[in-house]
Length: 318
Image (cartoon, helix red, strand yellow):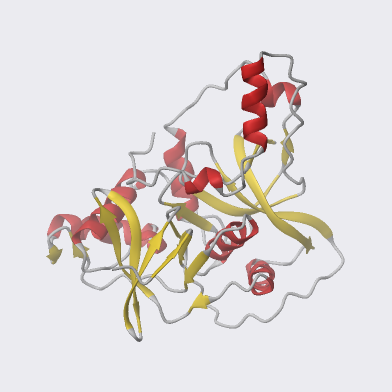
């Protein structure tokens, strides 16, 4: 039934979607990017089809605040999936910001922080707030599965623990905005030969025994079924068709990073002054079994973690 198979399908070729595609390609993976998501219809699609009052009201409320996460399809399971995701963050206060490019001050962890015995207390309830912040942002993205992206744990200036993955360095000056960042990311994608299926929209998510196995896209040539080995990424669609090439200008050298939180499926594109770097591991003085385990970890390929990752439905946040 599948027309093709890739590691990751990206739905939405905006800032977050293209940044995610770049990260996949840099890790040696295969990616397919569909430019558009299905628009929100005037009569929302509900659990039981068009006109379902309960789900329709929910989708209208979510659509007003979380537009890019709302998908209008005729598939029951797909609608239930997005309704469940949106329901988790529906009542969380949302700060959409002023649209400026998010910038964060953060530092790399010391060896003691990264490999010490003390484990930071986990507050699952905070993930809903982070998810709402990402959904309200044009820089956000959502993963359908938790994967090993080789992101780096860091500590923000406000004391928050984050996971960051840099996709490159940009020359940035005051006054630059979303358009300049879009141009830079689009240029990086073209340099990696990442193609965008401009006439494709999401028709449905394909589930196999409750597990997300791929998607079906609507194209001018008919349905196109894509199987994924490492899940699907959803992000805002790109509004500007041709942004041209990014022209660098003297300024601060900032890292363009995909920033997330531990155990969250939501991330956001942000600018950081510090390049994510994992501290060197302490010298091993353990048993032979520990040495063998360390050597095994060192031999792992960058994609192996998420090729073997579990692809499953969306759990309740927190």
